[in-house]
Length: 176
Image 1: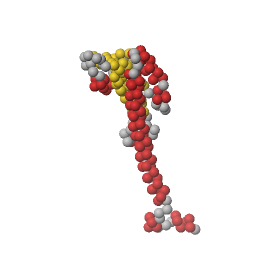
Image 2 (image 1 turned 180 degrees about the vertical axis):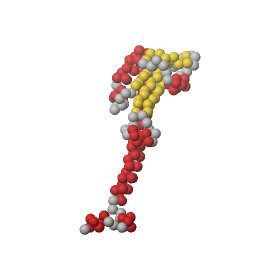
Image 3 (image 1 turned 135 degrees about the horizontal axis):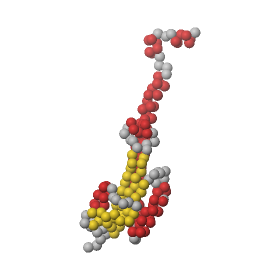
Image 4 (image 1 turned 180 degrees about the horizontal axis):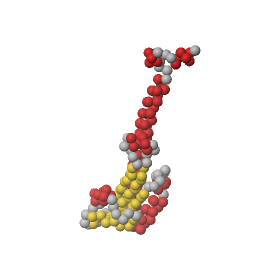
């Protein structure tokens, strides 16, 4: 009898009945909170990746700049490429390029290494770092990152993105 009575209640009684409201509120709020949490995780991961790539290029450029001759610098660059999994664990598909450079008459000449040209941002950094006649090293790394939860991330503008960093280090200063 009670089951029949609950099915045929008056509309006023049904509006005052609050059973199940907590489940409905939890469903609405948890969806919003889950979306915001996924966006926060993807954003923090993107910032961490950019920091790690920048740190890696800076350390690699200093190691290469400390070498005695250009052939040894190229060999050390190959060793860095071979051990990149130890430096940036869990990141696959990282592309690293390095080359020696010389600044002559306000232009940057590319020397020995795995890069055949300098991207515009690396060229500008080299012009700002080196004086005429200086020898240097450029290390550039790039990594293509896909957010953990791509659907939620695209809602907040965090799409698949390629992170790049290039660092120029002075190798030898020309004495005049």
